[in-house]
Length: 228
Image 1 (spheres, rainbow, N blue to C red):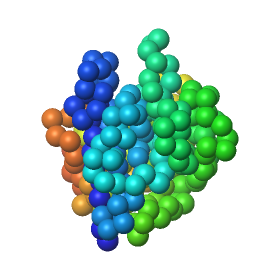
Image 2 (cartoon, helix red, strand yellow):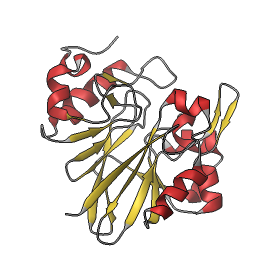
Image 3 (tube, rainbow, N blue to C red):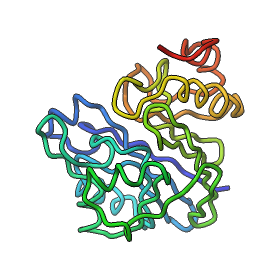
């Protein structure tokens, strides 16, 4: 299967002149089919024009946008008084369907101003075909009620559910420690050891890890009880 995952870092690969974007260190991902050159973009925010320029530079054809969760640094909107471009700007420049978990679509709509017609609402276990590539949606609540991860081949894009050596916060609205514990140990923790982890932020000295490595070294995946 000719799946590719391209990792783009805010402040380095796009939004290069935006100090706040660089500080937040969000990753944006392009997932697609090497043969057909079709791709989807994960969490396009901060510099939509720059992300689209990179898609065009790599001669890819954008066919959809995937949202891990509703926080503005991932989908656009207002954050600490700062207006972040995101899904709304993407719809204005290159309209595509936005794939959001059925429990998260309302939150994304609220912070971005998108219309119901912009969304495809998905549930855990649903699949999306990109060219000849099969992508599976994994519902991983805890950071937010409708947080989701994406599994394409042996690659996992984990948003703010699982980081390298860490995990997402549960002290923001919609956060739930019990749900996150289940998502980490019973959903993501059940994936094969060689599954490559692509997190939502650059919070570690390395850009990727594996589920096997995180299962052994990440204290939140090793925990025997819910996170405080």
